Image 1 (tube, rainbow, N blue to C red):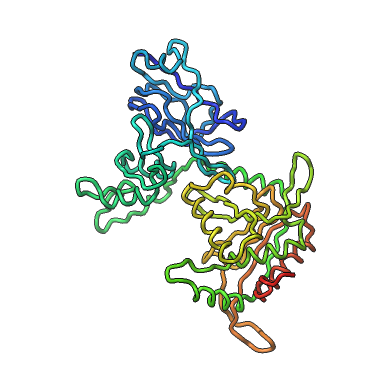
Image 2: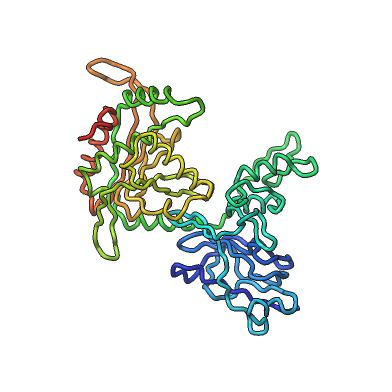
Length: 428
């Protein structure tokens, strides 16, 4: 037997350190080559680090939340004699970091890619199961061996429905829970936690990255907030009419694609709002095309997938693309291009939209527009009390580069388009 010292490999793109998000192994575990050892988070992406050789885990270095420099010791494996040598790394001197086949996945405003594992089958003879980190985590928590799950995705990749089907089918006729079952509470007993009890949750991984970026945006950008009320009775009528023409089972139109088209239209007159601030060079970069960020809530936190060149798409195509990139972000399937390059962002809390909100700008952009809850209420309309459908737009602008007058004028132009939705589709 010999020992193989595995060091954190160079994960590319100038990465000098990574944060440990979670260990997939512990001392005493046996691992095969390419089994995932640990998930780490760089400034660019979440990365699964695979084992370079087979062996038994002797020790690990670092806890979730710790920052580990590239090239520093990550864990020690006990291998069969000659195994380390076969990898070109004598155990006596410690193995150099292997440029391992790490698989980047989606992170907030970061990239996701795959490394080609799983070609031809869900499990290669010596390879690891091809799937996303989210599925791998769920299976790990539930004690499910992914090698027993048949993948229906490209090249045998395991997708969410495969894991769900396996759980529903169960093994030996017994259902397999996705999470450990909670302990039963005796009849008459309350499941409430004791008074004064606390719970500590370490802020690591994507949640840490989101917190860091939001803090920087709020600290560095002087936000100018502007809220305006809209009468969307006509828009709602058009939306219902168009949804009534859809085939059975087709996704219904929401307000967001109408907002997106209207925004594309008004930004032609307000190019200062469709821009990036390049702080390193001290310049504003105005974009001719509108690359629309769609703030999306996911199990891992808020992500902003992008509909590129939104102005080149019609209403239904735009709606379909917004749904597609949002779903890709939620399931960790979004590519690097789909998570970068937005020039302005729209956000919505849907039915939780409330009356007003103050969205935080998605730097380096200079503007963000949000929609709040739509409700019917009595208003004065054409000199009489009428029931109209209303909704607020809540927006934020970088006041360093967008004057309050211009911000208000842009929202007023957007209001006019949405209150008279036919104008959205008229070239002018």
